[in-house]
Image (cartoon, rainbow, N blue to C red; front, top):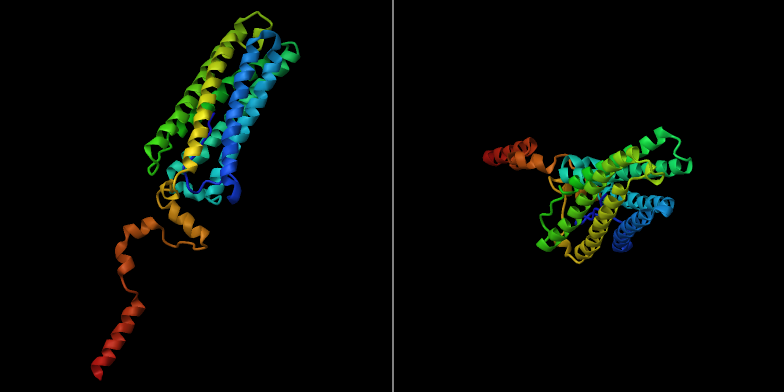
Length: 296
């Protein structure tokens, strides 16, 4: 699970006049989702109320999925939906496009896994296939979260100051460790559920609850650091914000100005002689002028 706040000058979390406000809403909503997850696992720890805890988990996961979907949309809209720029800037594809998408898939799998377990508990633990599918999704979902967190570590700032980069690590590391705890908890949960004879533990294991509490607390810490990071980035001068690499920033600027570049910036750097070489028509015209002058 991730809350990806970039220092790109081209990010677009909302309309131009309310862009900063929407970015704060995005960061605050993620923090709220992490808080709901913490409360949900605490409720799950009280065994008589485990169904209400599962419902709270579903609500928290929905908010997480919405935030990641908004992140993905904001990053794509920031480059005017020009997906082809991924070929010029690798980080744009790995971090700003792939990471939110992978976390969105993981959130959907986690939602389905918890939903299957909730349905299983209401049916009286009769469907072994449904329970097995739910427990498998509680492992597969965190795998996607962990993969997205690793991709998020590929985000490198070149223009931002050291304070922002420290805040960046303060967001990335708790989310990475939280995703790992959810993965380990899912593995233990599958073992505990099939080995336990207790009625409640046929849906979820106690180890999964404790791992979930620890992971949710790390998510909350990462979300809190992300709010601070968003505030810091919005106070930065525009000249210090990150630009696209590999000629992608120039290509995006020309696209917005309505100029379709026939020769990319990289091609111009490779062939500098072609820019200074005069056109054949110009050479012929100069020869005629000089030839005419010599006759007179």
